[in-house]
Length: 248
Image (cartoon, rainbow, N blue to C red):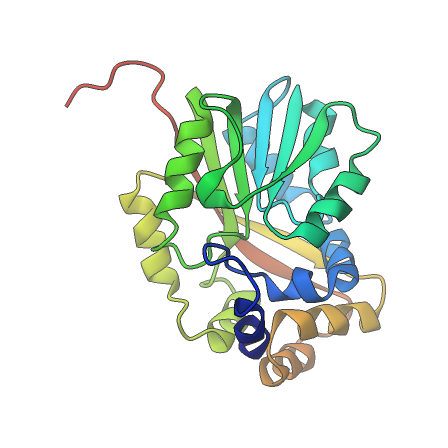
C-alpha cells in the first residue's frame, strides 16, 4: 500500500486524518480504477438490499473525489459527501455541481460537520481497513444517523483471492480475521460480495495495480492476472441504529 508514500504524507496531514496515498497522489489513475470497479453493479445491489436509500438522506464518508455521489443522488432525497483532503473536496464539488440534491463538505470522519440525526444512511467505502482504531468515526456516524438509520461499511475482503492475498502481502499490519471480529463485536452484520473489476486496456490495469501496491506486490499481481479483468471480494458490514427505547 505504498508505505513509503504514506510516511511522507503523514508529515503534512492533519493529525486525525489517515491519508489514502493512491487517490491523494494519483487521482487521475484512481478515476480509472473507480470506473473499472464493480462493472456488474454487485456492490450497489447488495447495498440497496441491505439499506435502500430511495428518497432518503445519505452521507458518504471519505467520499474522495465524489465518484459515488452521482449514483447515490439518482435515488436519494439528498446526498452529502464528506472528505478531509482539500484537493479532493474541490474535485468532488466539481463533479456534483449540476446535481441539485448533492453537496460536499470538508471534514474528517471523527468530526463530521453535520447535525445530529440528519441522515438515514451513512456509507463508508474502503475507509476502515484496519477496524480497531476507527471507533471515533463509528460514534460520529451514529450521532449523525436518525433512529432506524443504517451505517454501512464496505471494505475489501482480505480472505478472498486474488486481491485479498495481495493486500495482506503488501500490508503486514492488516489482519482480516481481526478486522472481521472487530466489526462483529461492534454489532455489525456481515455480507460478503464479489465484484468484477474490468479495465479498458492492459496499461490501465497495470497502472492501477501499481498505485495500489508496492512495486514487488504490484509486479506479482500483474504477473498473476491475465486479460483485463479479475474478481475482488468485499465485506459489507451494516449496523442499524435502534429506532426505539433499548432496555438492558
